[in-house]
Length: 612
Image (tube, rainbow, N blue to C red; front, top):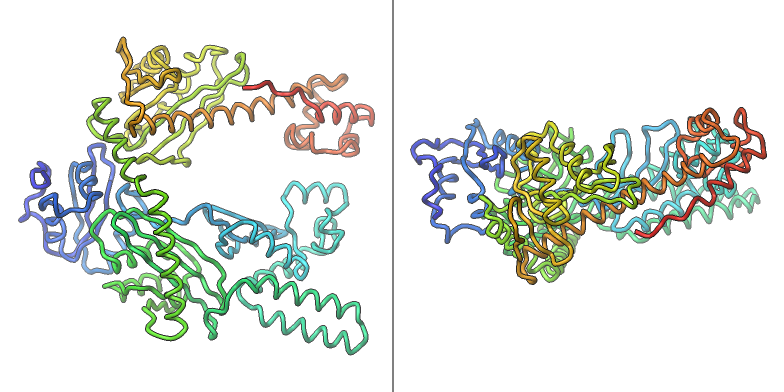
């Protein structure tokens, strides 16, 4: 089977030079990117007997319809181009070492006039200093609570800060000296930024310097019999020590070092990374990746180093790994271009570095063990579910991207539509969409379904088309969706899943398809449908809650359009008005204390939402 692919290039047409290659599917999407020292030898290996290929490699080849390549002058160019293409195309079969967005960071927003210390997740923002990641958000909050005693900088949200500035009263942290209260002018922007800089300096690893400085100040205060200040400095020292005591001393010589542990299984690999700054653990993260190609441990380390560090501005001077990449010099050169300083990738041989590598390896092994137990059948069941769907629905390929639409309304009010996306059987939340129904559908779910589909596929391109569109409902919903797709001049495989008997309805069919109740395909469809229903209900509740607040505002006697507009422009939205005090409302032009009281009372108890 593997040697009969009609699109296989003739061996003589493939150059023997180093280069980077791309596998494309029938929809002109790149599904895999790789590099090779010899393109001919590497590509020929894909077309051997299927028995010698990794299962995921076979899946990739089944999805592919052609392959092309680019010849480069050196392995360094190949490595750089491979990374660029992986970043550009995000191929579904490439291993991706992405930061788990569940990892929280301690962040200091140095890009603001009054920097704020907070917890942040996800993509990093320009001008923000990040420390971590931490295993749990509560660990960051505990650390911040301790350090605000010594570095009393702002930690409040923008809304709280603006309210304090408007009223001239600081929040509780300002009163208990856990914030220098720049909101009310107790400290200047320059003084507050200096405190934030010291906070960031401490988090960067300068622990001993701060402790020594405070100790000297305490001794001076004690000598001059300023015992109150000495006691405060003593407590500050205790807070700094308590905030750092959970971080073990890993490297006596300090510096910036990352330690990477790796455990490779049959279908997955686990990575455990420790970020050490000035001798202390400042962060930890981990990855679980599905293996795609027959790459060894050293190859996985090389891929990890390039993908994790190529976009970072905090590449350490030393990275300890369990296996040395074959092209380690090329990798170091690439990282040095990013970091702007020397970077060395090493395998520790002895001493405390070797001991800490053993700890990182043990963490990776434990992570893989837990993941294997928890998801022992997950990858297999997802692949089986997609194959079952392909067979049951007579699709040309197993559906990689599945989209599902659900409509939510109660008595025709606040009608919304939700679209969820699953890729390779897993939710792709970055592509979720929500629609506030603008037409005259009212209680007509079919008209609302049509509107969502017309808006979803307006100006859509082939690259973001689903392989299968699922609607929540039976024959009427499928017929309405099919008509909308036809009017939108879009050809997409379509099905409906009816709740009552979990029947599968297809366009232009008089009877439903019944999937086995225990099948992986039905389980996946139920999960996708339930996720769409959850998203639609959540969106509907939000809109209904906002509508009820607006309705409560409309019912206030004497509150006409001009005064309503004044409220909304001043406080931002209805929820901002709801959070305002009577005094703040009464201070607006045209508002008496009596009218302000009526507004606050009306928004304190809007009508209770009906049950869904």
